[in-house]
Image 1: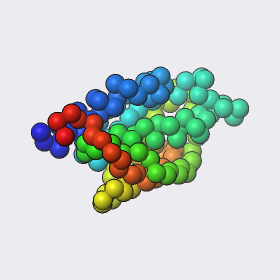
Image 2: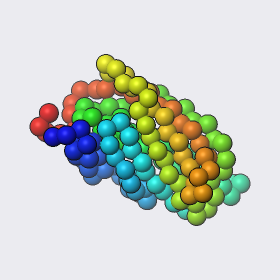
Image 3: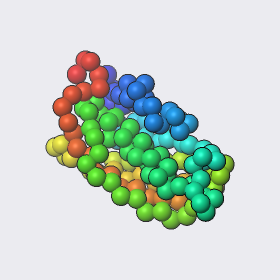
Length: 142
């Protein structure tokens, strides 16, 4: 199995049980070793008292992309920590894209950056996640 095949198989296995991402209408548009791209449209229940996308939903989108990127190698991986900086608001109806990329992976630890953008390319959030490999593998063959 190639690394690309492994990434796709791991993503399919995780997606099947990822009720949170599915419930929010997220779609996976790209998966490869150490990278993942997810999209989500801001709906009315996702808006806050300012009429913009609640930061928790932006974090969730970025966190989901992070999860798929760091789990793309086969072993099960969880978040050890994460932070986000909100740079611009998301608006009702915006189609948001979270692009995660592996910055560093060694031993059981990893570092991933996720950029969240609007359709016009405006960066609305930057997320950094630290991962930790745990016991188990996503694929039965490993």
